[in-house]
Image 1 (cartoon, chains in turn blue, yellow):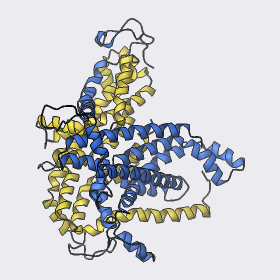
Image 2: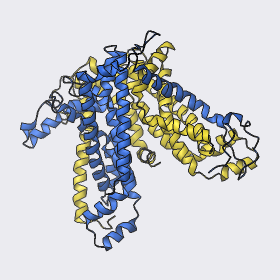
Image 3: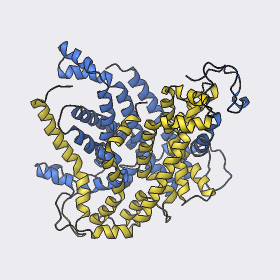
Image 4: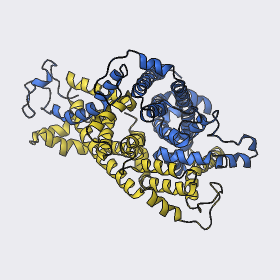
Length: 312
Length: 274
């Protein structure tokens, strides 16, 4: 690490940069404290202060226009938890995030194992599987809403392989609409999981795998007992990214269903947007955002602890 | 892993080829439908003959995509330049100074990684409205920069902590002040992580829909995704026309992707190892 100072002097008493303080271990390289000021200012202005205000206003009747507001206790939260749409949105969001996380990680890992082998076109495969990741999510959502429409490519494919009985209006049916969106998410972001798993796989030393082979491990037990434990870091990152992305889901829902049919695909993000900007109910919208923040924080903490302790 | 190309590898190759073709269906369908006559009712993969570019001309003018793409380009480039400058500067003392204020500031910054933007949404919206910034590109740029500070500072700080002090010491002995030493010695050494920061932020900001929808929606100053959103709701189910608009809006990002795919894939994978 850098020069070690005794942490006794408060920061604002430091000499201006350029004059070296008396005690230091090495030549006096110093990083001026004011370098953090521009970034911290804009971060405070855009993130910290409005987030703190959001948390505060969730206990008030602040409607965004009047400067005066008063505390209403837990009324806004009571409103959220007795509102059908908000509760549906909560359940939908958790379902979508869980389903997308599981499927995307399985697909991503399989793709990574596939392109990490000796197959001839492995570089082409990487480029193809990753391409949807950079596509605008809103645009990808529109493309899929076309593919999933009653006469779209998905139904055509089902009819072509003799599964015409399964063909229906995927996005118009409340029972399938949410999973149709999960399908889009998996198509779009499996390539992202793939490159993270691929980096993990490539970091596994060849000797470790050779040793396992010499010890008589088969392909499956090599994967289960050697590869998977060594991929733990990649799993943690991938699950965290998928989960947080899924919990914030907005773009694809707006493109594919707009939250419908009914409330079948309403997510927390779309409900926050609609209650604030279609219905003008700021207190409700803010309370829902606080609920969302708590859900994300709790799930991130749980996930982190679980994956840290898990021994495969 | 395996050292020879066996029949197993061949089976794997064939299944990957089939999967890759399936992955490409949406992209091929997007392009194909955009080339069809507007009254066409054929499927996504039924090729149109002769293909027509009429949809492109109409989508370009009716969705004002030229102006929207210019705005997207402006917002993305200004935001990314500001993020690089501010985040790399801030990371320098956060990585080099071991005092308490530096540690706590770092925690404050990375704490932002867990806070969803929705929490700040309405207070920030009210502030921007009071400042008269609704409909201005600056509102979106400021928000992009503020929201991307945590992740970018985190990446820079982690990288700097691994970077030996030798170069800065040499610069100091040669009489460089801290600012000069940062600009001409430290910053160039940060190039790998700067690449990652540029790629992740540029792709994210270019594709962003929610913030520009909120701050620019309804104004004349939209970005490509917001223009597309308005365009699609206006021409519901006129798929060939809609798809031409979609293609125009994603051409820039896809061209950049296919030109720089190696760097971009590496950027996405590299940003997450820290």
